[in-house]
Length: 205
Image (cartoon, rainbow, N blue to C red; front, top):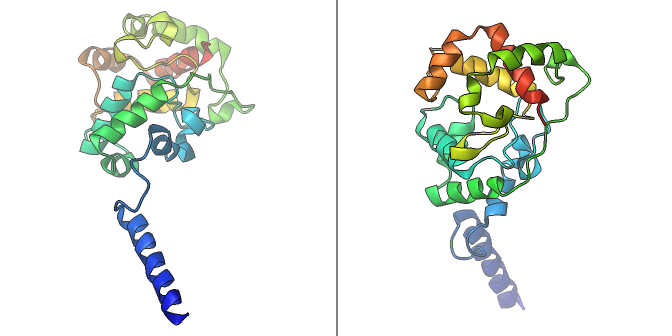
């Protein structure tokens, strides 16, 4: 009886060790949905963000998501924790995660009741932003809905998130990766204009 208990204990240690070390004791490779589930804490279930400072990823182009993750992993794109997270995945895992989110249906952000938190669309600002965003439309076609050529969707994204990112793109010290023509246009825009553009794209459905 004592020998049986020791045998069971040894087996339990081997299984636990396999889980911790990632050895063949684990049940095969992680699926795309399993890998993507680790992103849900910040980006919401299946990439539908529930927080105004976090972007929705559902329906974004896979190529764009892979490029951004690679930029995070290399340190080319400034981040708080995303560099550490991205570096933990292999290229094939990043490809799986990107394809998973790209296959999900886009869901527009849900504006909250408090404009001070940047979660509600201001119609007056959105009207001003439409004028300022005309040159953006050369790449972000169909009022920011188009995702052709791996262009990220802006229409229906969180107002607060876009305001933050636009200002980061404008900040020369951060040196955010961006197309030269985008940098050229953003440099011409004031913080007020960028704020209005954020409201314009957030207002699109």
